[in-house]
Each structure stands twice: as structure tokens, then as C-alpha cells.
Image 1 (cartoon, rainbow, N blue to C red):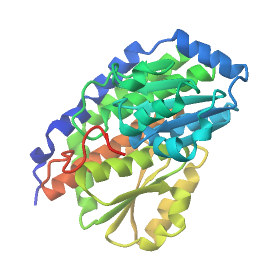
Image 2: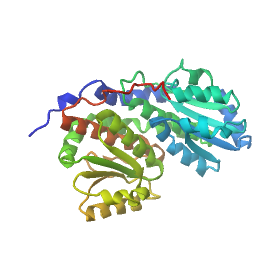
Image 3: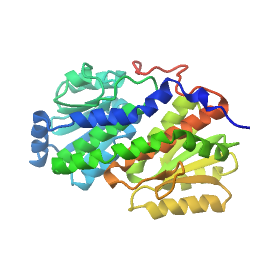
Image 4: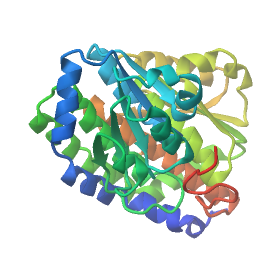
Length: 349
């Protein structure tokens, strides 16, 4: 029986389709900042002993590619949830630490407490979608995204933040601005094209999800951004049980849960571990498990992504998960992205 897709076409759906504009608007205003250049100069001169990356929810997971980029450049970098940083790792709030804090609202409970706890000891680079937020007003350098207002589940704010974080990473690593802007610009068309075929993608997914009651997302390296955020937005938008973890961790226990009611979405990722992720796919299918691979390859299926530079691949990788949220909601006859208990901004710790 055909499933009516009109049920999914609400405010969250409209936010999904407006992601190309959010990326375009964010890209248009990304430029060199005097304050950022000063902090980058101090970093290159060895004035900071560590870089601390922090956020909550999708803002936290979206920092994974920046973590790897800065580590590869030789900078000691740690990634820690803001909730843990403010209570259990306060020693990192030190003048010799450089903090990168990401928050869509810039006023979540944990982020406001971080600003209070830090007392301007460690300089903070903020990435936020809200210009008048405490995070934007009380930090040394601010990269503003231009995603506009968002109904509920993080989608266009998440993509815009990934774009801004790639820009930030390139600036801290002294990459030419012309090269950075050319690379970031190249993501706009693939995102637009993929989303233009949303109905085909959802209809492709629906038969393969029949009977599924639990879902895993697995990947490695930069793909952990999509893995963590993907599991989060599946739960938020559809109330569907989903867990995100590394491909290696999936073999340490969850592999035993394979069966007709379990679906595993694997991200092939970049060249470093692509073959390992493909091997996981093959091993799952060898046990008659249900799994699909998100990969850069020719084709029009929902899990086929065009080839783009590895640094911006995480922006594309979340798109198939967004299509999954629509497919799962349509199967249940539920409008996705409508919160029952949560709110857009978390103001309670």
C-alpha cells in the first residue's frame, strides 16, 4: 500500500529544504576576522598548550571533523561536552587553553554556565546562529551562521555550523583563504541537488525499513559527526530508537543484536578507513543482517553521494539520515520534528 508523504511536509520539512539557502547565506558572510587572526597568531606561536572544543547535542558531534583537522596539524586538541567541561574538567579553563564553543542558540544552560565559570580566563571562539546571545556577546571572536530561525530539530543550523567550522579550521591551520572559499562554495550545488530529489529518496528507503524496530549508525573519523548527530535527530524527530557509535565499537557487542528488526546505516567515510567500513557492511549482510552504505559513488539511490573534497564530506553525510527521518515518520503517519517534551533551546541542566 502506498504511503502518503504529505504527512511529513510540515515546518521541519520546510527547514530541511531551506538548507541550501542557509549554507549560501552563511558562506556569503564568512570572512577573515581581526580577532580570529590574533588568536590564530598566538596559536601558531605556541601561546596555547591545548585547544578545547565544546558543545552539546549536534553542536558537540559536529566538532569531530575540526578535532581531527587540528590534531593532524599538530595542535593538542580535546573534545568534551560542555556539561562535563563545566563540572569535571574545569582545569581546562585556563589562560593557556583556546576554547571553541558551538551553540545554535548561544544561550543554552550549559553554555551560559561555561561563560560564568570561565570568567574570561581562556579566550573563546564562538560559533553560533544567534548574534545577540550571551555566547556571541561574551567571547573574543565570533563566527555567525546565517541559517535563520529553525522550527525544532537541528538541520539547517547544523549544516551551517559545519561550514563555519571548516572555515575556522582552515584559518587556524593557515590554509589560503581563496582555497577555503573555493572548497566551501563547491558544496552548495550537491546539497541542492540531493534535496531536490527528497521524494525519490524517501520512497527508495521505505520498503527497506519495513519491520525495523531499532536502528544503528556506524562510521569512523569525520563521519562520527553524522553518526552522532544522525542518531540524535532520529530520536528527536521521530521518537525512533537509534544509536550512533564507531564502526569498530559496533563489533564489540551490538553486532550480537543483528536480526530482521535491526537496521544498520554505515558511513563509508574517507579513504583512511573506507575498506574497514565496507567490510563491516559485508559481515553484517553475511549474517543476513539489514544494512546500507552511505558512500560517494555514482547512482541516484538515497545513499549515493557525489564526490566532494574530504573536508566538506561531513556536510553531505547527514542528508541521507534526514531522509530517514522523513521515511520513518511517514511509515508511522506522524509529522516529524514536533517536540512533545523538549524545547528548541535547553535551558535546564
